[in-house]
Amino acid sequence: MADNLKLLIVDDSKVALAQLRAIIDDIDGAEVVESAENGVGAIQAASAHSPDLILMDIVMPEMDGLSALRLLHAKNPGARVAMVSSLGGSGSHAEEAFRLGAIQVIGKPYDPEQIGALVASEISLRKKAGA
Image 1 (cartoon, one colour):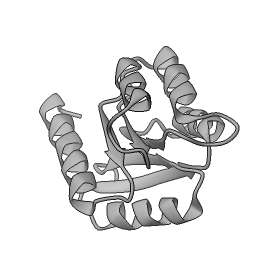
Image 2 (image 1 turned 120 degrees about the vertical axis):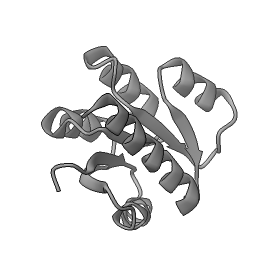
Image 3 (image 1 turned 90 degrees about the vertical axis):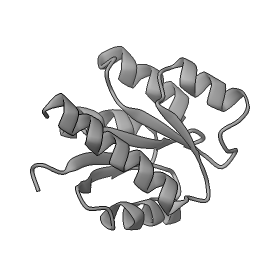
């Protein structure tokens, strides 16, 4: 649906992508418009689909999530990106993600309630902005 919050999900694990897609598919008002398996794919997909929210793993081959976040924000400083990490929301990776402009760091395994709250917050922000 055209009014849905458009999400790009990025993770090198096909299992993690499937889990995240299943969680988002159960959220009214949200849809996954594309998925990617590394930072290179994330940049290409973000350019092609202009997602409202990107959920991206930090540790990936070819180009990690932090490098991709840096490039995404260089092209579009207003990009809304939440980073995902099996390392949780603490440590140097999380600190770097926030420094680079991530709006949140989400731990794995995915908590459907946490993902739902993030998506609901983004939907609310979008409605307030009149998008």
